[in-house]
Image (cartoon, rainbow, N blue to C red):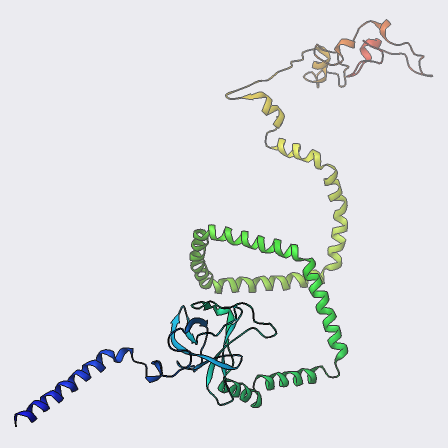
Length: 398
């Protein structure tokens, strides 16, 4: 009875150890195919190991065959991910010489066969050199043939009116649109050519315009605060216009009424208006002739009897510069104050006074007067020749 109890406990201990062992190693176990299979080609002492960088391995599994010239020379080892691509370990049996220019390709033995790795030179090239064991075939020298599933998928797209069918529809539609319109299409192409040529000729102006727009945008960006303030003030101004809209409308209506009345008056009195304008032509022409003199006359109206020039020259603050001429000569008294008395004489000849322009040429000497023959039937003079001079001296007087 003691022995069966010990046997049961031993059975439970082995079961627990097996469970612990499976639990501890379960995270690293990827199936039986991930373990080296006994009898696989290229395994064992003296085998050469190579590494291949490839973008995609499709459904390739470890222990898949490695072929050289369609002969199995090794098997696939571990496969890991490195820098977003696969790093595949290849084990090749001893004595096999892998060419130095070999490229690695994932291929398929037959249509429904298994995948394998091929180590062959590039198509059309002879094998050269020997690849050193432990070397890595770079990503640029590896590729993957399309799988059967990818080929059938691409073929289904073609057979089910995929992109090629759409291209055919486009071609048929374009052909239908251009049918019978060759001349119009040719004219359109010529116009497009002219447009493109003109656009190319104006390229400098277009660039200059874009640069000017860029400068304008920079200026607007620099005055962003001013523009913002102006935009903030626009709504109140619009509110004012909206409140005054009835008055503005009334004003425009009154203006329209006035325009109608003015138009009717012009039409009714058009002939008279033209006649009046013609009659005003001499007046306007006379005003144009005296235009240069009109300004000083208008300027002197407010300051009579002085002119603007005299005011500018005479007025000096609180005093005025001036001159006064007093003439008490007998001829002047006869012509002015004594008029109406027995001493007055209208048109009495004046004697030049000091300061008169002709004073230096005036003389009482009758010999200084030019001798001229008296006119026929003329009465003898009643006054000396020197006194017959009017406001201005006689010719030849000094």
